[in-house]
Length: 172
Image (cartoon, rainbow, N blue to C red; front, side):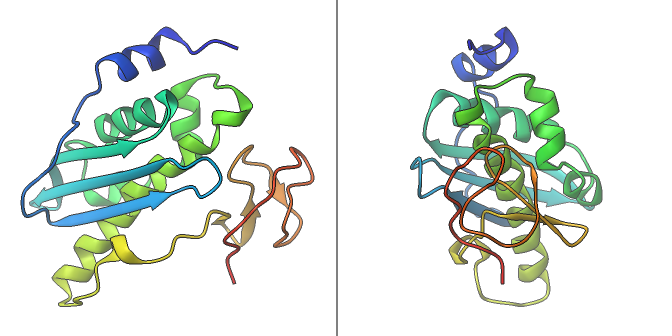
């Protein structure tokens, strides 16, 4: 399966790539299976994301996802940006090869971590959220989801029953 022209455009011409000096929030996630690492930095003004940048080490899909997620979040309120889900990112991307679907999950996770880090810093918490371990089984409404095919899992497990991929970093 080939990437869509939309995805290829974000890969060839990534938006918002770079570094923010003294960011208000930082989110960093990685996938130990494929080696992709995404770091999203945000600046916040009046509860809106006034600037957002990313640094990504990974495949073309990971770079495109970082570009797309930062585009989706820029100018949004923090509440609106927290509603950018893995599913919305995947829908925006269109079709991706099944072995690249996990990239969509990484982008939304990094964005959410940056926002959580911002709130933690506001509350005076010194711990940087980007240093926290990230679990890659998404939990929404009390259900677990596979990070590769986004299928609902019957329980916390080591393998997805739908795509057969090994799942690490289970939520406890």
